[in-house]
Length: 293
Image (cartoon, rainbow, N blue to C red; front, top):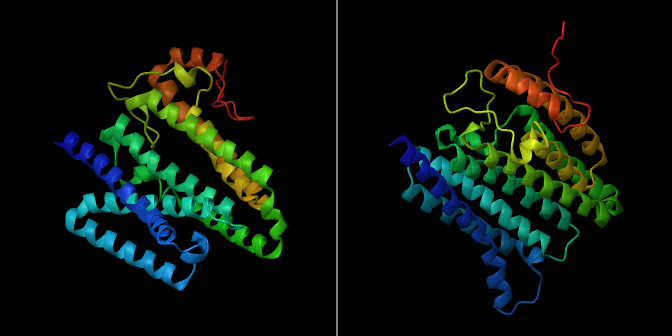
């Protein structure tokens, strides 16, 4: 029964994400109706805002009728991420100086939704609302808000800083490669992957050393590290680029040490041999140190 319920949650998340993504239909209808003013100008106007508000209200009402309790909570989060992704697409393809922020919206929403979806595929027993990673930590929320504030302030005061397209492209590549590496790591690890560091070894838990794990001991962390920094490079946020780099490096250094304590306990000499052959993949982070004496 539990397995069926979790599988259902994964399907519901896909449907809800697509429903939210349907926001892109609003400007398309406007354009096909013969109006030539661009999408961004329309959606930021009064009528556009009303159209989006009505769309959100109708969607939420529909989800409330169809799903109850925990299923509604999954649906509304997936729908919100789909809506954000759709708005990001609209901004990205509009004639506006906010294009790179549209890229950022797409990157953030896809990252969080795909975390949930991939978890539903590889390890449904561990699936929960936390799998979206939307409430990862207070620090994560503060970091995200800080990046929005910096982008807005600098766009208003130093607009030319936000038009460095080559730098934003570098950030986009970092984001795409980082997220691809992380999801590859999750799919390779399968049911061995968990968002929470495990202190007890499950019967099905095995040491994964193939695929991307043959190149990095912690490929999911490597992917997340460069993805997070890439989001700020994409936004041309100099303060947050430095802040994200330092904060992410410190977080993953501590996280890797904590995780490797468990891995050494689980796999002993096998993990030690693996550790000698393969690096963590993160700069200046070697993992837990073993006293040879």
